[in-house]
Amino acid sequence: MLAIRLLNRTAFTVGAAVVALMLAGAGTASAQAAHPYPDRAPMDQYRASSQADEIALARSAAPPAISDKAQVLVLGAQGYETAVDGANGFVCIVERAWASGFEDAAFWNPKIRGPICFNPASVRSVLPTYLQRTRWVLAGDSVARMTEKTKAAIAAGEIRPPEAGAMCYMMSRNGYLGDDAGAGGHWHPHLMFFVPHDAGGKSAWGANLHGSPAMGGEVDLDPAEIYYVVVASWSDGTPGPMMGM
Image: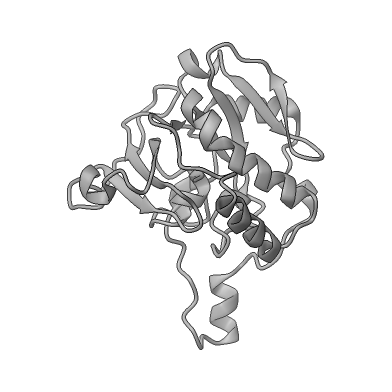
């Protein structure tokens, strides 16, 4: 469903890849190491130092030709709020750690900042789920309660498969996608594609195969699969780190 969540669920961490789950029977010391963020931090730690800083970081998710004309949302007291009106149907935001899967060790990591620009199809069919989750977080809901609400929303058809063509840009060199996301926490500049479960799966993408630039797959508690494709440059045109195949 969401960027950070996905990277955390696959192997790049995130904000998005398989953040390792604790093995049953692990001792207290290893449990603390596997879950360094067991509870939510004070909300001030999840907020940007200023609205201007958050706008700039959100826009850095995509090349200026896209982000300069996009709507920009920033984190407010009760949810995300419009800071800049857009003209091209794209929406840029900075995701926080709760975009991760509910069981991810990084779910409450206050350092995570995931700049992301959604295209119009994902604005309509992917972004609303994250915005709703953010409202739950700010209302004080527990992870268990948010899990229940998400299951109920899927059962009621309120969370639906993504629209055809849903994708987003994550090309910021200034984000922090996770403690294990490489030097600086930026991981790699990449695009994300959201597809329904019945769209052919990993084999249709050639994902996760040796030499393939496509990665990803199913996401828990979500009627979508997410695939990442690393690109060569950050949104400002500077080269990104090489991706080992």
